[in-house]
Image (cartoon, rainbow, N blue to C red):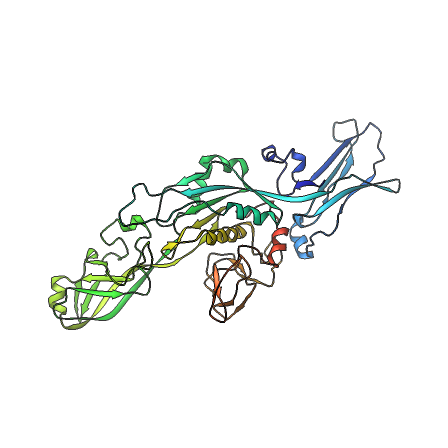
Length: 456
């Protein structure tokens, strides 16, 4: 029988539950013995590995004491006590799966304590699912938001000796067609009672409608106004910001994707202002997906503009709020947030399962880049630990296993869940999805991570 030691959790009663029998199974290994009033002849104790264990570099161990076996044992007479005591006190390295045995050397003989002890890590999570809209609107479909992939997530991390336990009631947040900041989920979790009990080892797993990002673009170009024309139809490269934020959509007939007061036609020294609500969605081209994605804009001409610009080439000046991009998910401040709708359509459950593991990988410290207290940077790592996008358009630290860099793009079949996108393109032009598992480079790193102080 192999005993489990939960090396990342402190010796606190709140973690004694669900398979953890006492605080002795948490954190460092301690064996206390009390002797009489005379100084005892105590044997030398040590913790020895059983088989091969994970190794850390000199830099890693110098930078983080949790990356090496520490012996804090002592023998003495505590202040105010008459009896001598000994404390065998060993802190196992942070890596999961390694096994050790205690040996005691007395009178030149080595005595083993018996059962091997295996290092494990445990983290907790709470699920938050965005509620459906209070009053569904006609012709305005919504993604079916639900929690998926929890078993896949737990099973994948268990392979790296990280046990995940769901705790607390499943929370919910009001529907939003756009995104919520992570602190909203944190507040919900606090109200459900799990976060204070298991902090800081609990993260939020939030399933939401979408995670779009907006951008604003100024336009100034020449258009032809034909005689008798009452409106002007235009098609823009990116969809306008409509169907992505209810608060924006309902402010006026065209939402807030027209920056107020920005639209006008310019004929020489004469400006013809176009009211905001005279700029609408055009009937063509069709939406990009079932949840929207409108690139067409129709600008109705005021009577003054019709009279003054008919038969002329004039300048159109305006500023629009567009969709910049969608993201599948994000990890920030202890929340892994997963979007059901991307590119104006539902994501498949398998895609969300892959994103969960990717974002949880970020939350626990993947991919390390050799920063303080981190593991050394692997050769497949790229990107950074900021929210800024790199030259590939990816934000965060990622893994390039299976791919070759072409300067600003990756070519090949992604071989790791920590690639910076859900898929890529091979040299032959075929799409290739990123797997829902860690690659051969990243798996040992996940096993070696120090989870005693989660980064969230």
